[in-house]
Length: 571
Image (tube, rainbow, N blue to C red; front, side, top):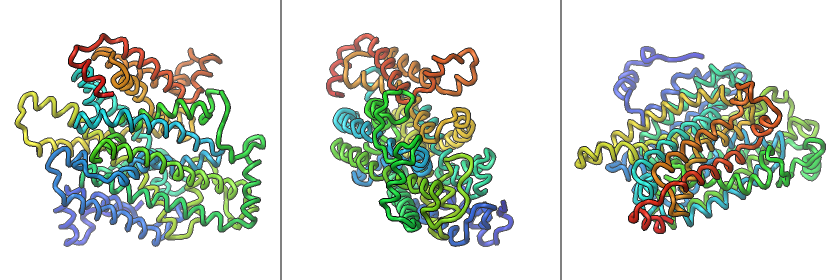
């Protein structure tokens, strides 16, 4: 790889770079591009036109970040909640863009390529979760008037409960978003180092570092407002890239679409249909069986949108609970056609590589990890310029996950931990101090997320799972305890500080203990029954964990009378 140092930059430009070396919002995204030699690496297939498209994308982000940063964020509500003035439609798109991420772009086509359409049925659970969030969780959150959803727990169980839940969220968000950044680094690494070396660990680490630097810089620009509006832009690029792929693939078909459908109907394992939408199996090891989609994914949706500050924070940027409810329901419904588009991409890629005689395309089929199937098509079959647009879509997905996560963790850190600690000693601290510390928290969390994304390179390989199951499973580690605690707070009058903390600890330990890598690392566990348990889908492990933690949290003594009165209001 070639590189350029500051000493090699012309004197006039060098002065600009030196003078603005700490102004990340203007230069952070361009630094990554300056470091990369625009000549395509071996096997990348990238041309000068593709690089121009990518540069145009980064410039668009830089300009929007600058325009948004011109509005002064004088309070933490401005920075972390957008002054509660964000339009519901933009919040809905941001919810979809953040929840789908690069995992959708890469692994949803892989899911259809290897299997069928049953992943789409997970939206049943997500719709049920959205209804619960809209009518139960959001009204309680808006009544707390806080930048953090965990203030509700302080009202019910006391300040230590709020701090414990917020800490659990931050740890869990590091795990979940780290996995997503790892997924987003895969296409970046392939772009920089080629298809043959793009998934090598040392190259993935470099790609993670670049994504992390760019994401931190953009998030610093304008807080949650810049994150939401950039999500809108990035979502458009993401969907546009997938639709272009579908048009190009269908244009290569040499037979009627009816014959393509016939091939898909018999192309699954043992002659099954790749167009299967519902898996009626009762086997808990099946990833997207209908029972798992209805039960497990409902709980996963409640955890994602109701107990996770990352996504819940977006709904709190709307003017009211009703507007926030519209945003979550719209966002979930919008996710259905979005996921469908990427599943269609996977089905058509199966035709391209498994039934090539039905197309005009030539070239080798992807080898090795199936997660690269869409990336292989992009880098070898897509025309110049369009290829750059698609890789921009992948960058968009990766950055969306990072931007939202570090902003949400910064908000939780300030609202739940830092502000209560310092105002207890000095209640007159000016608001600009918390905005400044919030920005520092964004940088700190961004670095931590990048480091954990590196860990995910090796974790995913040890679990031997598809990328989508790995990412979703890691995301649920913190949710078992948080869901149990919020269920207790909103639907009962039970619980105490001790039972809340116990539930959070038990939920976290349970989800970690059920990870496959532990089974592989401990020979004493190697029995058929224990192996069967470790092979069940993560949604069932989450369901068991939620049952455990809800019971544990409800074992706490009834709170005092004042807190008791708060419970019905929260519900």
